Image (cartoon, rainbow, N blue to C red; front, side):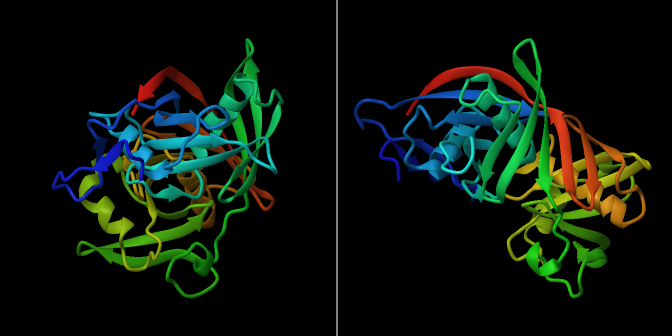
Length: 305
């Protein structure tokens, strides 16, 4: 536990950290606020900052009232096997395996800051090393194409508790309503549901019930999808550990894969996924999944704890 932070009792059931008064000189931490399709995180350069307690600091800084505010915190760290290592923490302090929107911003930061000035970057994640191809305008990265690797379809490896070799069109009942779900892992587990306009869904009500459903032993991210045409999907997402976010890169990839598995889209063709925060272009083949999208810097600053 960081000596400058303590867990507050706020009655919400969600961990919340505040600064401990009278603990001496404050630690100054530089940060960059970035977003991909409005999926915003606080990015901390661990090449320059010495961070000891990643989870507690993530909860503290993510708070939109008493912290900086974001969907979580991403730490950009040195790596022995890649240009940089990404560690991503959710609002509740849990560590994520992968973050599609986050890794694009990490690639932008690594290039723009001069850590590695290369058109093709290798970023280490808990889901393996990902290859990022940066697209540069006026000396700065604007968009990034990420090789997300192959989609995992075997239920036990996602992990989800369904029989067979895939979990396609499986039926579950949540809050007395039956849903047909397709489950995919893109480094994180995803449950994809196709239906009518996702804007009409009470996601705050049903999202937690999907996240903690008994068939999902490590919790799950849930995507609600409307198929607009055979190249376009509209999506809302409930992310485990963070709740609803404006966008989810791995979720967009999983949704495109699920759309192909269900016959809505064709493998090998670009699929545009329209999220609340912007669009991502997904390309799914037998060799893997590629995701292309924006990466934006909002501001930089110094926080004291």
